[in-house]
Image (cartoon, rainbow, N blue to C red; front, side, top):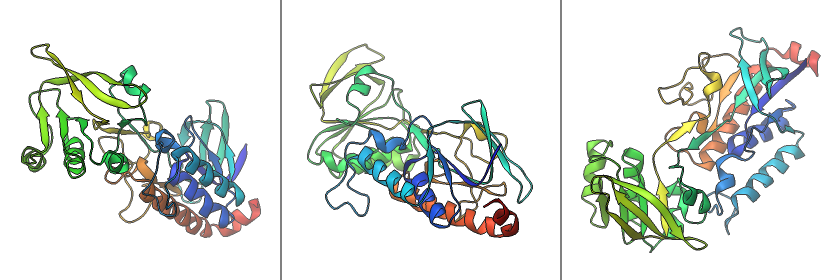
Length: 318
């Protein structure tokens, strides 16, 4: 069975940044990409808010750059899915990971960068325009819709936040709420209702996202009257929540009621020794590429310091 100093589960800005730092620290990291190498940014056509790209960059291209940088320093990037994790509770002991339900590997430290997946409505038209008018992040993509009309779907705080953010950029924001009330906190609801260029349609569901090459309108239906109407819009923002990709860690790592991994404040340290959580798998607040990259750096630095406590054993493996 292979034994390693450091295994990184997942890619994206968090995983690749962790790999860069871990490799430069001579931890010889092994990275398992999962089923979606590059994570959520691979569905983003343009990234303009990541430092170092003054002209913006295509999301998949950015992930390729990060991968090349990680490999340049010696990261072993492997296409594979970690399907089982058996973490040790004893400091310095190995953790066992199962890859693709068959191969078992051991690691002194594990850096989790499995990210979170945005929830979507599941419409075929929604998939068709992904990255071409359909988005799950107003902060990431809202700038591209400046001066255009947009639609936001959702009833919670995330939807309210995205609507008020977009209202600063767009002449009109239409919010679609499936029930007859918001789930958001009162202060957020008040903020939405007091914003003059936000229109809220209650008891309203999306029938279809329409357009040619990009979104031009949204067909909706009132679920009380069955009346349908078409709303002109160049952007369609889905804000019905995210699901962290952490199911395989349940019962071992501390997590909140949604599934976000809980770390010691100001660190990437989990409740188990030698296991570190980074990126959107533990960040339910910001969910930005730059904050994910920062936490990936934290995870690698903490893994390096952790291994220093067991330097003699680690040196024997090298």
